[in-house]
Length: 201
Ligand SMILES: [Zn+2]
Image (cartoon, rainbow, N blue to C red; front, top):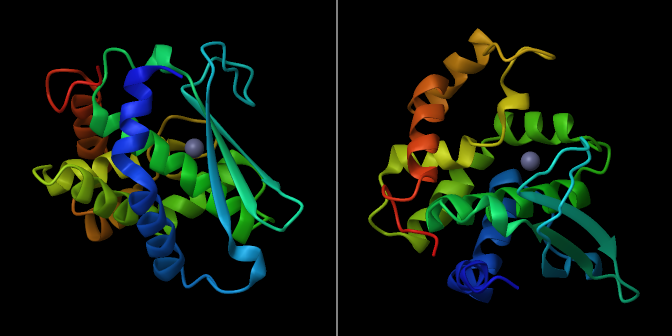
């Protein structure tokens, strides 16, 4: 495991993972009780990671159910994507992947990235991500934290098959995320580059 990546994962810690998962269950009104609600999050580092789209990607998540019913969320991360980024951005990537894991478990009918990204955008997952980022990086600007939560969800707010922002989603972003989507994209990009936030390594 890349040592810098390990330090970001350890910074989130067991407590941070638990808080984020429980917060997401609460925000989404998912039923958090029962024997099938145990989580184990496993991280693997893979510098040759290829996504479902056939392209190199920074992260990819798969869920498997272990023999005792535990939901194992395996998050593969590609540290080559992270070397010139910030701890804030890498943490946001991890929380985004964890959201995929939770959605896969709680909303199995949403079985494509497009469906999951749309759900995450519409159901305000960026707010849950922003709250965890604020716990991890107390000085982070709130608009930036939400923008980092929106990062990676472009499929969920563009007109399908294009890069054009859906105007209704932009209005939604202004109302629920306190910024328009171009502002969010700019803020996320700024926060992803080493020098603005906490350097990755
Ligand atoms: Zn995603």
